[in-house]
Length: 434
Ligand SMILES: Cc1cc2nc3c(=O)[nH]c(=O)nc-3n(C[C@H](O)[C@H](O)[C@H](O)COP(=O)(O)OP(=O)(O)OC[C@H]3O[C@@H](n4cnc5c(N)ncnc54)[C@H](O)[C@@H]3O)c2cc1C
Image (cartoon, rainbow, N blue to C red; front, side, top):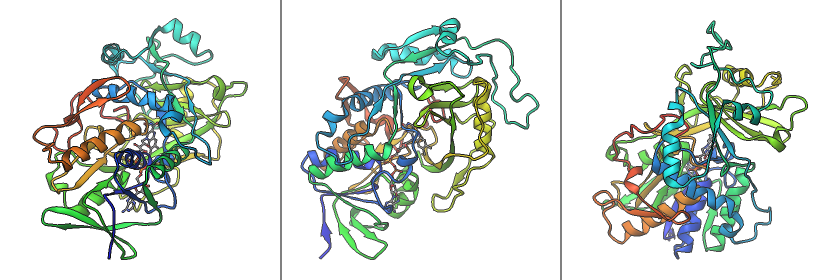
């Protein structure tokens, strides 16, 4: 006899683990399957795990602001003991530079004001006071080093920035996922590692279970694709790709870790920075390092890859990102030994995730997180659990999208925003900023 659960969750990253906790607390017996050896070892483990509240869309900002409160009250939310301790939230705040590219943040400021998200509006002088020693001249448009204008100021200085105090980062995203695993287990959930799903079995228009690489079969009337950069492969196994207007692809990313300049305590005093004038985001990293990611400027090629076959080594891109950051931070050390991470985003056409049902009864997806949904994992877990319960009780979510109340900020959103059948959302930044 095959083993049976109420729901199988494919993936034990931050969102798969959050979903297991939420379903478990609703009385469901869940099993998370992951091909890797532990929770949070996929793209979650590589995540910069920045918690920020500014997004290009009102719904995106609302979800992120709701998510912030889960991180702030992490111990209450997890509510169990994890023998490894709880992942701390370093609430250092986030500075977002006003640039031509982001419309000087007028739309974002309006979205945040409408949602009651706190922020300080800094003019150039206030920004300079906040970042002593930084070079605040304009360098846009972002270029590659082979462009003769690379690292040449283009006239004038940054107009200012918005500072969001309700922001920061989780220094150990794997530990946060382990915390969720322990919470899910306390609610009755099971996790199995080194367990690769190779088939999704269907009967009579519904999913009935999965088959693993070792040939074992596990049955469940509900299967959820939370497979991160492998999401498109899992959707192909389930035969649901045809019914989707929005799709997912794995996009390769490099993140650099470099030491802070001599004499600067960036780990103690630094903030998260989003700087579209130089095409970089950054945050303090343990060991007084600076972590530097890319804001995907148009001049950089996008490297879509097979998630089972891509180069995990650093390339010229690592150096490009560090050199771009060095425009802003004179004296930034550029070590010869490259450190950081190379991993994958699971990207949709509009860089907004898909949290949805599918054309196959009992098959659901929380995918396409586009490099920006670590912060939203607790909310996404709750949203998906509500959606699955409603659909299994007969709701036609495609015809009548489920309203979902963001518990911590008391705002109800239309989950059709995350539909696999939506039109591409023109309000998006079409980048990791969401
Ligand atoms: C470099 C980088 C930086 C990022 N920075 C940020 C950030 O600062 N802030 C933010 O909010 N977000 C960020 N993100 C995005 C964030 O990390 C992701 O949105 C989030 O971790 C996705 O979690 P997940 O659980 O959906 O996926 P994952 O963590 O990828 O988990 C999916 C799991 O599914 C498993 N799996 C796949 N196929 C199978 C199969 N066939 N059988 C069994 N298991 C399978 C994988 O092994 C994996 O563990 C970043 C991502 C990257 C890569």
